[in-house]
Image (cartoon, rainbow, N blue to C red; front, top):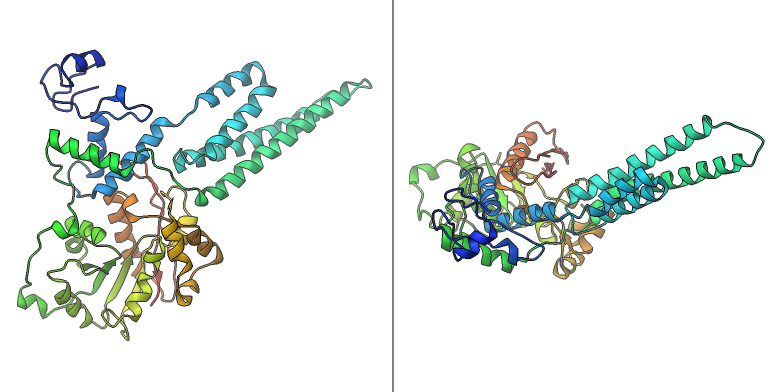
Length: 425
C-alpha cells in the first residue's frame, strides 16, 4: 500500500515493522487491509474517493455522499466473477456443460443485491447475448446439417431442440432480469457506523477534510440582509426537502451561478429564511423548482408548497418538480435503492391527492418501503441535474411536461441516470 504523503510503497512487512507507519516518512496508515476481512480498504482508495467526490477539492460534499460512494466502489471490487471464468474455460473444453454454467453464473450475478446495479444490468444483457447466439447457432446447425436415412437425424434434432430451448430460456431470463432491476434493493458493504469510525480516524490522522460539510445547524450564517437588497426579489427559487441538500447547493455557489434563491422546507438557512421568503412572495411570476428524495416524504413536497399558507397557497407561481419521483427510479438503471419499514408505513398513509398523481406501479414501489436519497448522487452530478432541469423548464409548454435527462457517466463517481422536470404549473 502506498503512503498518501510520500507515495512510498509499503508492503505488509514494512507496515508491521514500523507500527503501522510509512517506512520512509513515518506517516501513519489509517487502514490495514490484511485485518479487514473481505471488505478491504486502503489509504489511497479512501483518498481517491474524497478527491473524486470533491472534484479535486473544488466542490463541497456531505458525509453521506462519501458513504454512498465508498459503498458503490467497494461493490465493484468484491464482485465475484470466479464462476464466470470457470464457465468460459469449460465452454472451450466441454461446451454443453460450460454454456449452462455460464448462464447460471450470469443469472446469479444479475440477481444479487451484493453487486452494483450496473453489474447486474451487464450480466442480464450477457444472458440475452448468450441466448441470441444459441438460437442463431441452433438454426444454422440444423440448416447446414446433412440429412441421411440413419438414426443420426434424431441426434441432430435433439441437439437442435436443446440448443433452441436453452437459448430461449437464456434470452427470456435476460429480459426478465432487466425489467426487474428497479425492484432490487441495494445492500451496503459497510455500515454507517463503521464508515463514521473510518472517517473520524481519517481526519484524526490526515487532518480535517475541508470540503466535508458539517451538519447544517453547525454552519455559521449571516444574520441580516442589506435593506437595499430586500427591495428586490428573485425570479426563481429551489426548494429542497432537507436542510442538508439546501446547504450543499449553497456551499457550492449554486445560488450565485444560477441567480436564484435556495431554501429548504424545514426553514434553512434559518437566519435569513423569513426575509428571503417574503422577497419571493412579492414576485407573481416566480418559478419554483422542487428537489426531493424519491420517498413518501419527498413526493408530498409539491402539495405542501401549493397548499400551505406559509408558502405559495393561492399564488400564481409556477412549480416544477425536478425529482426524484418513483417513475424516475423505475425508468433508470443505476440508482441506489434502499428500503425500510418506516418508509412503507409512510407510503400507505399518503393522502388521496398525492396518490392520484402516481401510477399503480409507483405506489406499489413506495408501499414496498423503497426509497432513493439525493445524497446517493455526487455533488457534481446533483448540480448538473438541477441546472439541466431548470434549463429544460424554460422551454416547457406548460401542463405536466416530463423531460427525461440522461446523465450517465463513469467519471469520478456515480454513473447514474436521472431525472427531469414535471411541471405542476
